[in-house]
Length: 419
Ligand SMILES: [Zn+2]
Image 1 (cartoon, rainbow, N blue to C red):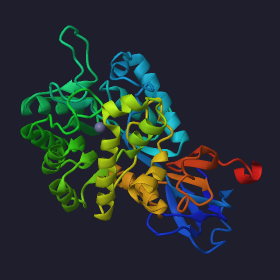
Image 2 (image 1 turned 180 degrees about the vertical axis):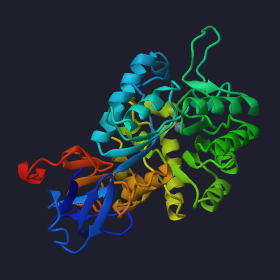
Image 3 (image 1 turned 45 degrees about the vertical axis):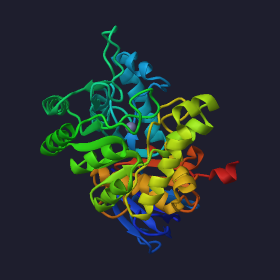
Image 4 (image 1 turned 30 degrees about the vertical axis):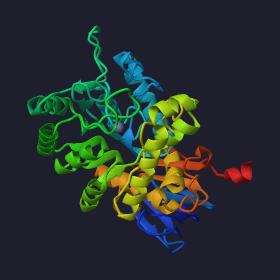
């Protein structure tokens, strides 16, 4: 495969505190060199990309992906989607995510167990376009927990694996492992947006969470938890969970525990969910009040601003797949981190790229020699403009593993000029 050389542009490597002028050389599926000396590769036989006016950044990672959501408003729409449609929806969303610059996605619960993992296999085999995907279990929840939507008079399946007791949770994780998942998703707390259990209610018992932690660790699976209540966060941390989602109602003790674990954990604020509910959903004041959205969002903002100051690493994503925040618009989280959580644009970009890739442990996430060439070419300067990365018109190129999913148009005129 011919080498690719990006020249005349800027590079933000994911490590530095600003972008700089540099050339970047890709050979095979890896970054071969990043050089600040212009013309260093002048004699090289390479496909040359004129990156003038644009910036190379690492590919985006959504750490709370719902690729199988059929733009769902109500939980029953997930349950009522047959497996065949579910697979096609996931297939289409995988392409949509890569189109939007997401070279990595961590599943946050596959309503039908095998959907995400068969799509992951097809992507890895190169037969369909999509991000690197860590395929999730169905959410593991207790009877009466979040996603256990069963009704006594109906015999239908729910979009979760309902488990009670350490033996059942161990069996469920082993079953998912056998089928080929990468990530275990636990619902340890409820959620305010269902009648019950609310977000302050903790539903998985300590011995169940402990057993999930032990089993996942022994099988080498990543552990991700839905944890809104303070107690659910503590149970997750004690059991060795790596990715804590939401964390809205963390108390002082939970915040201290999160900080103490900051070298091994990541948090997903999922702030975009609240923003979209309030501004894009057309749900109306009455419904939002009934769901307690304002109070939950205030708590979320307070907790994640605090965790930012404490140096706990955050990742982007969360419930993209709803009609008012469809898959593909996930990079809006970068601006939300700046607007609501006090991040600088560069810190938010780091959360959207480096942190997610570090969590995935796939050897991508920074633009350095030897790393996988998962990168984006974005018009302008996304390190200072938090809206740049979410604007697909400014996404000039998407490269995954050294291969262009979206190549810059020849003589790439920037949209500022074209408009
Ligand atoms: Zn959740």
